[in-house]
Image 1 (cartoon, one colour):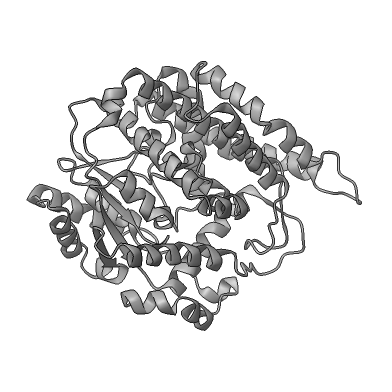
Image 2 (image 1 turned 30 degrees about the vertical axis):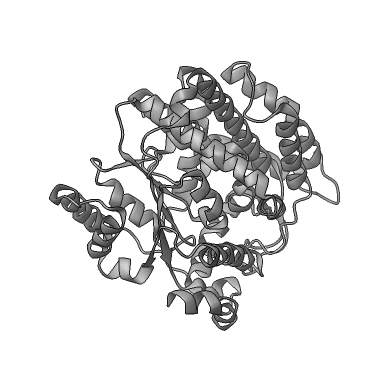
Length: 439
């Protein structure tokens, strides 16, 4: 990330945090909230206008230039229309904030920004593929090391440790994941996206924090391809994700474009870089078949943590995210997630287990979160052996420093009871997974 872009992001983050978001929330309360049974502005009108598919596509082309998306316009428009309908029909009961959550101006603004950014990225990568098809047919570094596991299982820690070894691994950074192969004309959309990320990380810093220009998850690449993770993770909506998981052909297509995005990032960084990709995302557990079919030489590290602990930690994190976007209209009450998070986690782990039974010989290394916490460098050495790489003394020293710095960070405190979760019920729900992996 250039110094100028970093300055712009810091400026935009300050503006978003202290001016724009408070203003949007105030307008949301004034215009969209019912006062004496009446409200001045129906959020559905905003959703219809601001998230109109053709408007979003035209907006993206105005930024990135005219050209095709990686899918026909009709399919892109259909996906956007489904996104629009998902927010319009949102059922937010049980999403873990005091009182009933209601869609308003912040959620519409965030979804508009994210969809626009994804469309710009699509146009950029599709144009790059058309200009240099030979490179995209066989880019370097596809013997990737990919970290996955349930959310809140230590995947970020392992990513940051391995990213200390800059000689071996090529991690994906925040700007690259948001707009692969970005050019000067993308500065505004990239700055806006990074500022939004910075605000989110600041709001959840006790549970999850990243530097916006540091190593990050590759979920945004799949979001650019059309995978609807944003609807669950950011907005708490399960319908689009359920439909995507039921459509194998669509997932294969999205993972194929994910591969092209990785190649676009590498091409923009220079052809001489042949390091192996270092990638990470919990959501890959949904689609390990597609991941290995797309990157057949990849090796996957799967972290395992007690699902009861994961559920409580995930509730604590998502409650912060969803409170940032939605308005609570009912009288305050303790947050209760009901089955929203547990159902999501169950589908994620069930999909991963089913893959392991279908493909028992897949290149997957199992790692317990407790083992990583007890002796991080020993487990890192085992990951290196699994990947067929040597851990240098210089990289080991950088990892030790990272661990020392992390030990000073504030602890993330949470409890299952805070969110209406019963550990005994969770143990029964995830008994098969717990037996399989000894967590």
